[in-house]
Length: 420
Image 1: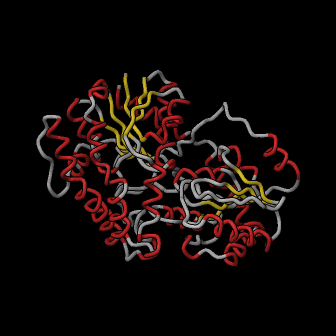
Image 2: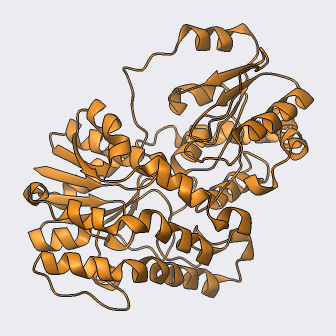
């Protein structure tokens, strides 16, 4: 069978879907990944078929983060407007890609895009199964608001459920014309003006495969049997080998802390690097600084700081004394699985949600939004991370609880059962 996986966004959105694709390929499926050119090498290096959507994920993420939302605080409406100006501005690329006849040999469609955008419509046209993939909680519950809303402003179960409806409309309406143009190209009638395919998908109990841990986000009573939480989907990279310099640094002294912001850009990399270095100097100890899309680093780093270009987090994090990161879903999962305390410096979107979950689970201090980060509050948090024995014990217990999870294997079996 030929399975097409659709994944669009930053590396944190795409890499887990590629990992799931590898699991499906290992079970004998032919797997194609439809994503942006930015991730072509990642897909091909894993032996999967690549099909491009035009667009530069790193540039679009940079534009998104440089928008007014960064300085305007955490405002859901501003956030969606910024998303529309960036990833939403290339709808013609989506329509062109998903209209290509190359995709018409698909026997099943798996998509990480919200509300079934394009993927559900293609599956309907081809009359093949459709699966919704999610690496953040998107299913309606009264337990917490949609992860894109401020969790600390929860007004109770009614408000929490309402945030999902608001989020669905904010996502659907800007794409409505594009989706219906695409449906007409496929010979399908227009979908609902108000809800698109959302209610149809719910009525049909479209399978939802959630790539995070039950120990981090517990299954809710409102979630029916078609909603599955599998555990995180981590990409295996057996061919990667650490450099001698990295190994020498790790073995030279006590475990360092990790600081990195993944796919998040910053407006002033040098000033942000200086802030981090000042905090590290204040506390003492050693640090691995991940350059990432933020381009952190400078030429005159002290010997106690190692500038890292890349290393698989699954390999690196367990060797750290503590982990400080931006709070992407996949990075959060790997930090929580590592067994060491961690703290999140959220920038946008679902990252504050994961920051709160990390704190509630007792494995790290309260998150510090990047817009409020200072050398002092970062140093204070590092002291807590490296000295709080309860956090370290909680991190160890959580690692033990998650140790038997194999999110990819569980997800593959769920998909196989549906297809068979």
